[in-house]
Structures are given as C-alpha cells and as structure tokens.
Image (cartoon, rainbow over all chains, first blue to last red; front, side):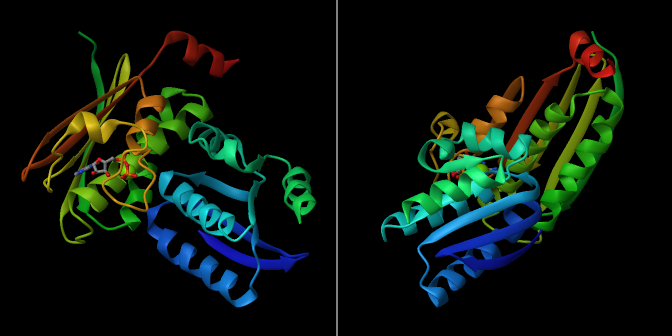
Length: 115
Length: 149
Ligand SMILES: Nc1ncnc2c1ncn2[C@@H]1O[C@H](COP(=O)(O)OP(=O)(O)O)[C@@H](O)[C@H]1O
Ligand SMILES: [Mg+2]
C-alpha cells in the first residue's frame, strides 16, 4: 500500500494504491490526521481508483476521519471504488452516510458542491 | 462424502504483514477452482478479517505467537480454518453481532463480512485457550459454468 496527498479547492485528496488492511492502517490514519492538522482542511476525498483490496480495518480509518470532520462541519467522499471496494462500502453502511462513487467526477462534485 | 482434493496448512507469526500472506495463500489454493473474480475477492475479505482478528484480538497485538491457516479444497467446497491460541471469546453470539467490537475504534464488521461473503461461518472458542474460525464456500456447478462462458 502506498499513498500521497494533494490539496486543491479546500479538499485534501488522499490518493491510495494497493491493498488496504491492518498492516498499514495506523500509519495511514496518522499521516492523514497530520495532513489535516497542518493544512486546516475539513474535507477529504479518498481516491481509491488504484486500491485493489480493502477490509474493515481500512473502512475504520475512513469512518474515523468522517466522524472527526463531521464534528468540524467537513465532508468525506470516496471515489473510484472498484467492485470489491464498492461492495463493502455498501455493505458496511458507509455509502449511506457519505458519497461513494466508482466514478471520479461524482464524488468530487458532491464534496465540492457542499463547500 | 465429498473427496478432499487439496490441503494446505501453515502457521505463521502474528504480525500484520502476514494478513496479506494469508490472502495470497488462499487465492493460490483457490486458483484452480474456477471461482468468479468477485467470489475470490469476497473470500479474501473473509480471510483477512479472521486473520486480523486472531492477531488484534486473540493475541492482543503480540507479534511472536502463531496463527494457523488450513485451506482445504473439497470436491464440493472450499474450507478455510483460522486458529489462534489467544485469549478466546467470552460471548460468541455477542461478538458476531454486526457493529459489536470490544475495541473502541474498530467497526465490529469482521464477522458480519465473513458471514455475508461465505456460505458458512463457524466459530469455536474457549477463554484462555483460543479461537478457531471455519469459513466455507460451496462450489456450485453453475458458478463454475458461468465463469467458463
Ligand atoms: N480471534 C479472536 N480472539 C478473541 N476475540 C475475538 C477474536 N475474533 C473476534 N473477537 C472478538 O469479537 C469482536 C468482533 O469481531 P469483529 O466482528 O471482527 O469486529 P472488530 O474486529 O472490528 O472488533 C472483537 O471486537 C473481539 O472482541
Ligand atoms: Mg475484526
């Protein structure tokens, strides 16, 4: 798993690649929180276009950031989900509370539209 | 009784890196089964959850304990056993409830995913002795056929 950050239009983009499981979750979470703290941004788009696998450990990080930013009036969206990722985002209920999209554009519009 | 075609057994240290290893092993044993890609992905999630649980909950993060993984390809099913000799589960029914977690910042969806993605989920546990999770995927004729098309 690898990740990098991009900041644009008030949104922190978390671009992640590979498989997201418990092995990198703590580091991933801390890096995101660090980036949020430094930038003062309140919105995240998780770009999972290049994520081939995610389990509940990874979802926990996304949900945790959602809760944290909700309290600050921010938003979280997930874009570019492949079939496996999309399925468990639906099953977990995350897709009910945040915009989850297999298509790049939609998630960005939703988060952007709320800014 | 169905015939046992392949059996692969391994034991590995309870470190986070081995969660990915367990997924790779299961995928390799399941490769000749002609499962749909989406079915294979679902099995990988179930295995990932069970092995993560053994490490996080069973061994409470200790890195030098052993997790057992046994993968059996039967004529009519794939059976995966994940075993730890950790703390055990006090109340299995409660642990298996969706959203139940003994650990504050976790989702409590591990068992829920195992349950939705496999045809059968069995959990055996004894306090102070450990936990064994048995995941079963039935291999149906239609599934194999539709993948060939
Ligand atoms: N191998 C195990 N050993 C001990 N306790 C376990 C084990 N697996 C699961 N549990 C217990 O069952 C609960 C639910 O597990 P799960 O559904 O995977 O949710 P989570 O891992 O997010 O807590 C855990 O919080 C833990 O208390
Ligand atoms: Mg779990």
